Image (tube, rainbow, N blue to C red):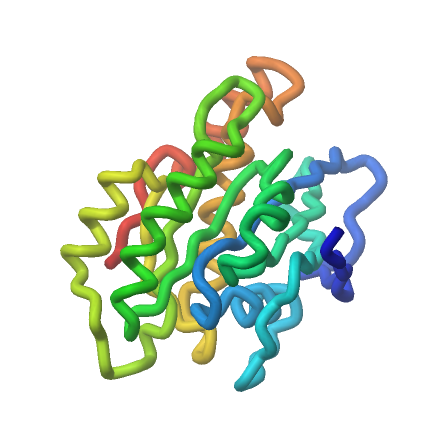
Length: 220
């Protein structure tokens, strides 16, 4: 079994009151090696960025507690799935139980966009929500800070629509552009899913209170 390391947890606010409902969300972060998955997680959880992160061996995960609403606190697990193909048969077992997914590719490397399609197909084939629907997956085009681009906006939008992503977004983990916004959007989508609600009434309230969960997030 490949190792799983638990990174230091972080919180965007002080500890939520005991009266809040807690939700535990598991979100997997997938994509080719070197596209910036580990850096994305570290930027969001700890607001840090380091050049030259080592490739993930197996699976790591980090935890961050966030205040989602006045009545709900979320413990967000971000699972960093190794991108090397030799780990595929083992690491993809960690898809199980995922509530959401970020799929990253590198804007300066067109091959990572082409392989993003295979990552999405693999996710859809191996992991479903309890109601049988696909795990909501947000496509992230990383390294928007670089001038050299090998991928057009049209190619990103076409792949986003063809493979039924919940949306797409250009991000720069290095410059901290659209990182937190992307996480918030996906969490809104997840919290609108019926399998996380205790009752139909709660589901409706969640969706109504966050209209972003009902629209596409395409800004490519």
